Length: 401
Ligand code: SF4
Image 1 (spheres, protein in one colour):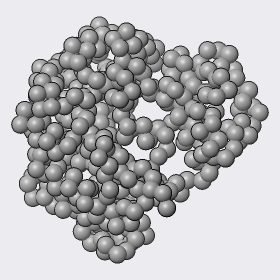
Image 2 (cartoon, helix red, strand yellow; image 1 turned 60 degrees about the vertical axis):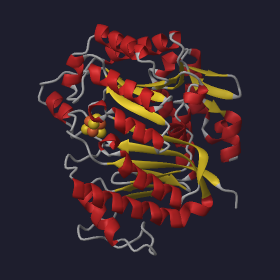
Image 3 (tube, helix red, strand yellow; image 1 turned 135 degrees about the vertical axis):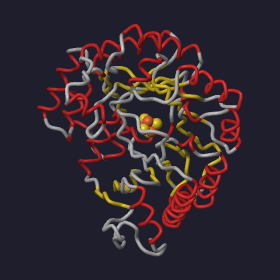
């Protein structure tokens, strides 16, 4: 059987402090014993999946996300990375990325991460305006971002991405514009531009419900987005996805492209998601449940249908088999996020049918209306959204759900 390509996501579930807008799973207890226990469990989980999937795949991307992976010292990540390399066939040119919080970076760590073979850094800068960083509850200031870039560059990183956020309460257009220009000055190769979302069960959500915080209007949010994309283009960044720009094709994030192209990936650690063989599964979003379940896991038993643990849960707590139609909708949904859009020939090869044989006449007519309105383009070989269309992407994508 021909091996396919696989991405690996590793969730490091520790943060120094919880940011009030964030709904990613993390815990603030990161003492030595807990970290050691987590690394042991994580390695067991990686080994377990390696036994089942190794012969099927070549791994071409590894991504350390979180949480805050840079809480870990290089030697701690080395244990995990060695386990991945022992359990899977990782190709020589694999993209190995990690998220980095400027509040936890230093020169020695950066050199250490690079020596492990980590090639790409994704720095959670968010803003260069200290007032905005304070609103976001971040533990770093703008100087910390500049220092982190410097440590990373001196440590040998040549592929660095910055996360920047707009639509933040109290953030003016001038502040956003200054942040973009400050970001250009530190010379990243990739930028991710995120509009702040008020996620349920976060402090921001509660403060908005209590009337203590006001959401940026959709109009202002879109103005900030369009301004950023145009400025980035002027500065030599090509947009390749709704929220992502890069200084050329070689700096596109291969790992994230897997999500948008509906390729297979395995996620390890609490709350991590996986997609393999048309099945989505996710791990429980609690470190104590995860540890308990993995420690009790019999390496010979199937983890997806294994015994429940003391808490009445398993490491895997979400499982769904995609139907043909689910895959089609997800492929279109994520494909339209990319600038190059959807390649209709690739679509035919993957799904063995033409897109317009799957969707009815009404869907096609509605899509044509978006084309006439300048929101989408099609040339018979491709369909894609224009910048104007990316602003209303959810409306267009919902045609295909
Ligand atoms: S550091 Fe990142 S993962 Fe941790 S709470 Fe803040 S935004 Fe969330």
